[in-house]
Image 1 (cartoon, one colour):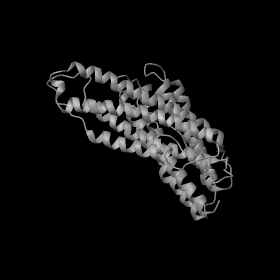
Image 2: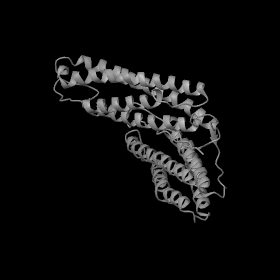
Image 3: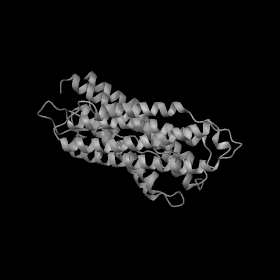
Image 4: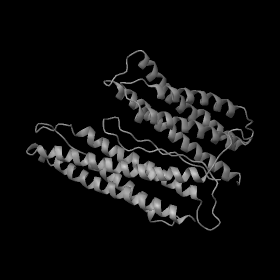
Length: 331
């Protein structure tokens, strides 16, 4: 039984929208009759690798934006870390080898080829960005900008455009992954008498709510308007949170493997979820009090984005533990 993992949503706290992602583990209803791997296992492998890619690229770009001011002056002291590029190059090369140069194979070769082509495009977009990042690093670290500040603006436009190209390629890849995952997913029963299945159905419902709320907040809401949709999706998440926790606690956990999953749900996933919910509550309360504005929205962004990533991480870790428990049981 194979579950589906969630993709991290990697947005920047700055004006430029950075890498985003978001996908999860589910039981797979599509099994292989050959020696090839299960479809969902391949999809999850893509999710795992690209989550690592996205985090590394985001760190690299944050390093650039944190070091280079929007208006570069000759008297500025600017240096960029070459180590960030090296680390990210190594990460992307490792993922490329794992996804495109290994013996991974599924029966549905068309799906595998489509994902491979999309990842190759994503990888190439990164390599273009990486080459520009190296040029920019040399430009600043050699002090060339001190006698030629005009080039700084050209590099700024170039590197941001190429970063957006990575984002576009990543979005195309994750849209296809999401489509394939949903079509292959076994739908866990939230009322199942099997504790592990019930917990996984519960986190599926909750994490989908989290993603829907996050999208409403990050993509659909303008701070100058009423957060009506954000409030509606927040209320739905809070309601489902109470239902799922009650549902999970209603079962007997005499089996040690099921108890392990339940403890992780209670002590990790639910804790991260509650912290995430609390940041939205603060946002909505402060908005109602008239204290949220374009001048301080970045603070809310940071809290909501970082807590979102933690929920997704705990979701995926819980799924991994569930898979291990099910394999232990011989299912």
